[in-house]
Amino acid sequence: MSNKLVLVLNCGSSSLKFAVIDANNGDEVISGLAECFNLPDARIKWKFNEKKESTSLPEYSAHSAAIIFIVEEIIKKVEGLEAQFIAVGHRIVHGGEKFTESVIIDETVLEGIEQCSSLAPLHNPAHVLGIKAAQKAFPTLTQVAVFDTAYHQTMPAKAFLYALPYNLYKEKGIRRYGMHGTSHLFVTNEAAKALNKPVEETNIISAHLGNGASVTAIKNGQSVDTSMGMTPLAGLVMGTRCGDIDPSIIEHLIEREGYSLKGVMDMLQKQSGLLGISGLSSDFRDIEQNYEKGHEGAILAVDMFAYRLAKYIASYAVPLGRIDAIVFTGGIGENSVRIRTKVLDNLAIFGYQIDADKNKTAILGEAGIITADNSPIAMVIPTNEEWVIAQDSAKLVSA
Ligand code: AMP
Figure 1 (cartoon, rainbow, N blue to C red):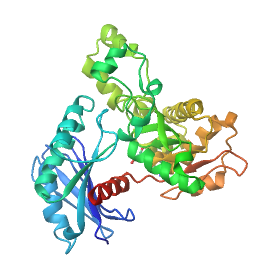
Figure 2: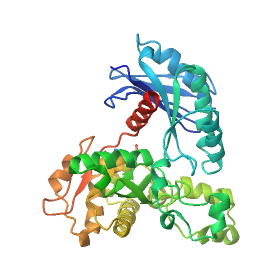
Figure 3: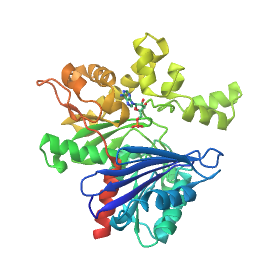
């Protein structure tokens, strides 16, 4: 271990993911999850030195109680660990147009994060709670905010605007912001290294495929277009989110089918995507198992997922002109041999040809090129958002 440890916190509305990361090399010293906040069975699990532990938290615990537990019962119990901490890095979902890069948190930044709550009503208020609790627990450590949206602030207006009355953007901030920025940034840097090119000259299409999924066009190392929108609901088919739909469907369901607005939004967020199409599960492993058994819903869900992603990738030929590589990352992108095959088959018009053996090898954390020697390049790069947060925190502390 080094003296450059960062506690990385990712506070959701009812859970908190945490990790202690060595900013020098990305090594994960501790990782864990506190969940079921505000419920009687609030609990926490963590991993340290390959040993997994779990316990219940006091009834109805929330962010503050979880952070106190992490500090008092996990970090302080490892001799000499706390002394090696240099910062706490917070993953923040929405930074609006205010935040174009990671920043040290002060009162103004905290207010800014609170002001962006209207754009991420489930996430940003939870981040604020987490920051306040971490400030109390570590009063002498620098707290850093790393924004999911920041990397996409390089998009040009023609890509980030919706074709709505312009004042909705100017006065109300209605625009595409994009998400998963830390992941897309990480794989861009890694892809440039793998391609042996300076990142400022690297053009890739990065497909982050997890429970949430987004695809980004990256030109000369910068985001120029992305599939998520003002919120994470837009774009690809996701675990439970619908991705792109005709907005008139919402009016139709409310006016003609008796849905409430809340009911429709709940359906679009939590009952659609892979879950909605398959009728089975939002978890891609379940979907693939059922695909193999010939389940019609699972087959359709996989085909829709791959087709929608391939269409997005094809459309990003427009802003990029030249594509150095397609990069697959996230739980599905890093592991699903089938999805990668189907996506590249859908892109055969561009000359992509999968190498079945290389594709099979690039799973479970293995990076690598998965296309044939005479094909344009597609590769797998396991993402590491926590390391980006730790590195940004370390840079800001030393600056
Ligand atoms: P993430 O949000 O990046 O953690 O990704 C979660 C998604 O990745 C879930 O849908 C998982 O089912 C999927 N996933 C994880 N491991 C595998 C695997 N070995 N094969 C296929 N999908 C996987």
